[in-house]
Image (cartoon, rainbow, N blue to C red):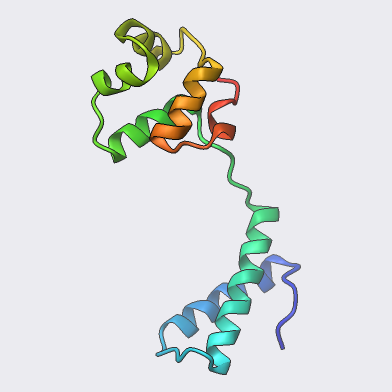
Length: 119
């Protein structure tokens, strides 16, 4: 019987069961499929409470997204306004303005809550 995960042992057992289920051929709509889905939800909720993952540093998020999108620093300069501003931002000497945050959110698809953090 499935129940909420309250202890680390229950968490470990749930992870082991998910692994076991993932090693089988799951047929959608089957009891195993339902069990896997429910266990995944329970594990996710447990991890959100006990192993929260914070937002990344805004500057690291910008650099990471640039790398993902194969953007050069000159392309970032175009987004932020000019080359010196880009250098000051990436070095941490200048903070992001509201208009920069809006552009980065729109163009690089970085959530605003990541970019507004103190750094």
